[in-house]
Image 1: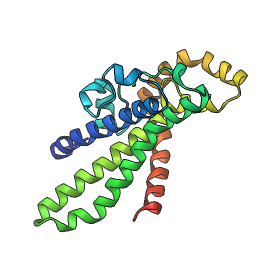
Image 2: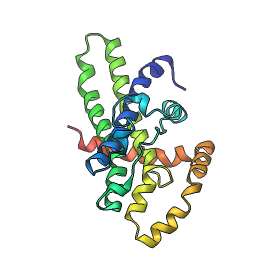
Image 3: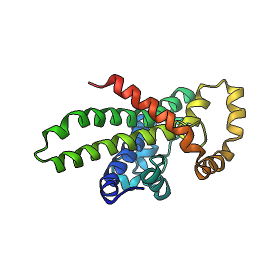
Length: 205
């Protein structure tokens, strides 16, 4: 259970992780010719434009959650599959890069704090940023609609397989909620997060 300090420091960390994730989707789509996110005011780092209350609470408490998806229209892409793949990867990749940044900052910045109390607070804040970004990235890599992982998988499948895969997309949210409710999602996601953290450690400065 989160204590008051973790809650207080976790909220800005969570909002930043969500904002970067959705902005990355929208910006990637915009660069590929899709203006939908921009026209709907979603090409922004303002967290209020991307916040999903339930997803944010899940991320804050369990370190796994989601934001309100940025609208994407693949019709604008020259290559629908390639465009969808790039846009889908952009969100989790942005969180991985943010986690890498805060991981490295956590190795350096706290030691420069003038007091031990400030050292601990700074380190906690930076570590929470790592945790929330990794949690958001790992969760969205699950191959279940409407998460990014499902779009990544469908983009890589041959047309016939993609069609069959998407036929079951309507059941994705129900399966996802069942996994979250039973705690199975946390069991699946924990090794993914650990693997991503190890990769960050290997790539750290």
